[in-house]
Amino acid sequence: MVRIDATGGALGEVSTPMLAVGLHKGESAPLELGEAADAVLSNEDFSGKEGETALVYAPEGIASPRLLLVGLGERTSFTLDTLRRASAIAAKRARALKLDDAAFALHVSEGSAARVAAAEAAAEGAALGLYRFDRYKTNAESRELETFTLVHDDEDEVAGGAETGAKLAAAALLARDLANEPSNAATPEYLAGKAREIAERYGMEATILDRAGIEAEGMNGLATVGRASENEPRFIALEHHGGENGDPPVVLVGKAVTFDSGGISIKPAASMEDMKYDMSGGAAVLGAMETVGSLNLPLNVVALVPATENLPGGNAFKPGDVLELHSGKTVEIVTTDAEGRLILADALSCARRYEPAAVVDCATLTGACYVALGDHASGLMGNDDALISEIQTAGEASGERAWHLPLFKEYTEQIKGKTADLKNSGGRYGGALTAGAFLKEFADYPWAHLDIAGTAYYGKQQNAYTPRGASGTPARLLVEFLRGRARDRTTEEA
Ligand code: BES
Ligand code: MN
Ligand code: ZN
Image 1 (spheres, rainbow, N blue to C red):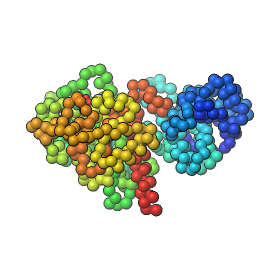
Image 2: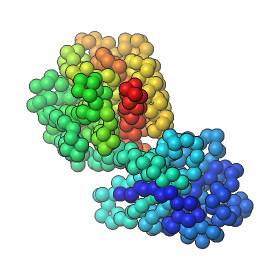
Image 3: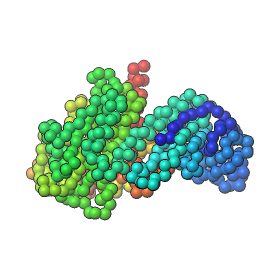
Image 4: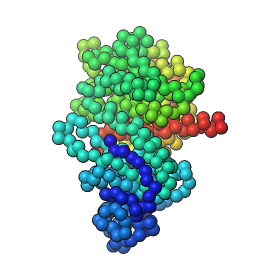
């Protein structure tokens, strides 16, 4: 794991094997660099276009033997995400050059909050960009970048930001690790074990229900989806008591279908291997809890993760079956492939017992959401405008965008059952919204739902800090949302 630190030295004096400096389109290099970048800029070999790089050897007048210019694009379209990508590019280039250390110039001036946020983003970008999942490669490239140093005049501010940024990245890194694991390793019990580890690390409370416990609780959605599997289902609850006693908690719910074959309504074989990622919602929630713990957020936070496989078998549930879910509502199974909403319904109904301030669930729930938004944003639905807007803001800030979709009452009409209260599919049209409408039936508190079917994993690198495989989305969005709530609390008290 790369160590991210900070130094207050002047750019020209930093002694590092490679100094990276971000430059906007059409702008000259910072004065501190002297003439080091002039040749590249005057030859127009480098325009500052986003993602563009130029490597200068033995640059004149600066201590570092290598200067990497990284394009930041137009200054007017600059965001923290630009910085995440730029630092990821720098860190990965240093590693590709087999260097042990590199430094990154944070020449932002406007105000302390902006400087800290920039340091967080640069640290996050480097840690996320360097991520690799290669534990199953017997000849994996083992060389790692050891340190990545952020350079700024105010060392203390930036050091704090670097430390926080590394913790923010850890949410996504854990989520990626869990989701990239194949389903023969990442079973429901494996996820439960990871939850226990988080609880131990940070003094949280972990409660794990096995199959018998799930049945005894009346979580028949979860018990039924998991019925045909040798790897038994688990219901995972993690409680972080960072707030006052009795403060209503925020509850995070994550779908963790460790493999979704579709069950009796079996999926086509093409890309079925990707259904190991169907636990990405649960992975993101556990990832977020890791960072809730390391930042020790002054809030009460509960994580609920229903974890199961969805397999066919002699005792599998079948289309036409009717079950009574945890809430008491009955549902008619139209397709065993709409399993996510069944296990989430149980978790959402269980969340009521915490008298939550808000509940946010995330799930690789529908192919329809993927079709609607592509892989550029998660679908966002809910029953509370203020909460929706908090999630949108957290999405923008974290670079994990969420787009608000409607839950008109007509979508609820579409999932009314014939023999039971509800049916578990509303058909092809508006599939993301009928799934959202189904979940809404179980949420009698401020609630938001993130459909991450299109954003949870990528077949090829998505951007400089999101490699192929699991993205970890929306672990960082969730942490950002919780940090926002923690900030609001502190200002209310002041
Ligand atoms: N896990 C899938 C959704 C999914 C599809 C995630 C593609 C990622 C990529 C979910 O359980 C599912 O099968 N949904 C069905 C619902 C339908 C049968 C009502 C779908 O989207 O087709
Ligand atoms: Mn399914
Ligand atoms: Zn699924």
